[in-house]
Image: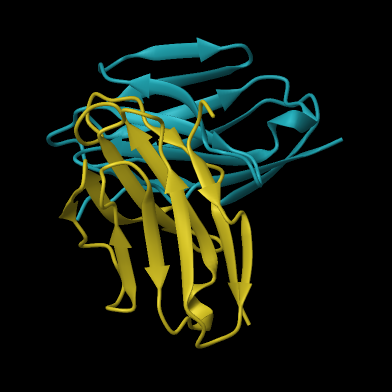
Length: 116
Length: 109
């Protein structure tokens, strides 16, 4: 497809379950970002990849959160032992250049996670 | 930590009325400001990239202004329509995008 693709679009997980969220960025895009948006909040930065290198993971809220982009294209955000506070929309974005400055950022439609 | 604030948090506007809302940000080390519209279950859509103090940009009924010296940007919607209902986000692009909390706009038919 032409845009950023995320799957699953909707996920209901039982508390304690592990989940994996996938992001297919636009082909050739160097930068990939993950954001978390909880209800009533703006998107909060989680992590940033430049190709396969995870250059910033300062936003990951706990060690239950792990992200990878092993071949510099598809990325997976994994949440272990999900908690109710993990319920949020997880947005993936990509850009052709490095970082967000001076680059057009393209977003996916988000993965909506509900932990029950 | 970059502090980007938006107000109001939510807004209900009668169809046909005009409205505006604010994004505030630190004026030091300003590079650019992005405005996005995010409709539920869709991708955030880029509206404007503002870079210069005094910038004014327009896209149909939506326009935006920028004051980098005092650290704010306004988004205006003229003659609101139901399809304008969405969350409007501003963001500063440093190495990553730092978003404001958003303004949720609901247009009442």
